[in-house]
Every structure is written in C-alpha cells, then in structure tokens.
Image (tube, rainbow, N blue to C red; front, top):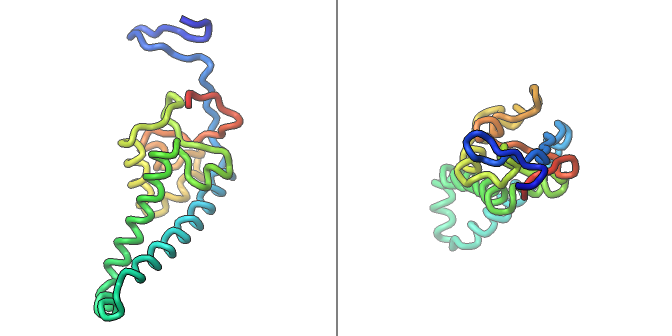
Length: 159
C-alpha cells in the first residue's frame, strides 16, 4: 500500500490525495449557456437532415401532423446530447470542455451510465437548469445522480 492510501474497515482503499473542487457558479452558468447554444445548433442540423429525408409530397402531409414528432425529436436530441457527451466523452459536454470542468462520481471517477442517465433525465424537470444557483452550488441533476461537476484545474481526481 502506498503512503497516500488508507485501508478502511471494509477493505476499501481511501485515496487521501483525492481533492474534488466544485466548479464555480459562474463556470456552471457558462456551461449552461454554451451547452444550450450547442443543443440549438444540434437541433437545427438535425431538423435540416429530417426535412431533407422527406420528399416534398410526404413533407406537406407529415409537416401538418408533425408538431408532436418535432417535439419528440427535440427532446430526444436534448437527451442524446447530454447522455452521449457526459456518458462517453469522459464526463464532458462542449461547455465543460471550454470551461475545463467535468462530471465525476464521489470517488473522482467517470460516473456509471446509470448515474449519467439519471443526471440527463433530471434535466427535464422544470427550472432544474437554474438549481445550481442555490447553496452549495450543486444542481438537482448532481445530487439526484450522485455526481459532481468539478473544476479540473483545482481538483485531483482519478481520470
């Protein structure tokens, strides 16, 4: 066992060098804005592709009945953006890449996909996007999924 590790009663090793610093509210808000813009661009491109694949005869018929289809597609794209980015790109969205923050679990590791799924679904709760403004600066999607958004420069973590 290394000098910076402590053996706990249940045999788990606690890494004493782990130091997770929450991202500031300013960085979290910047993440929110950048990701919102990114999702809008993602949706515009997605709907352009959707429209291209419809022939003009199908387009008129489907477009009149498609408000539900377009709404479902928009929600799906929103879900896929966060789930794919945070789940498969080391806990980072475009906003997190630019602000040098990332999502980790309480042990400083990449969260399991179950946590990322809960985190992503939580974002559909009304006003959840502003929940990180409260104390201690953790959003509902953080606490419900048992994850943290950390500042990479200030933290020591396992990734």
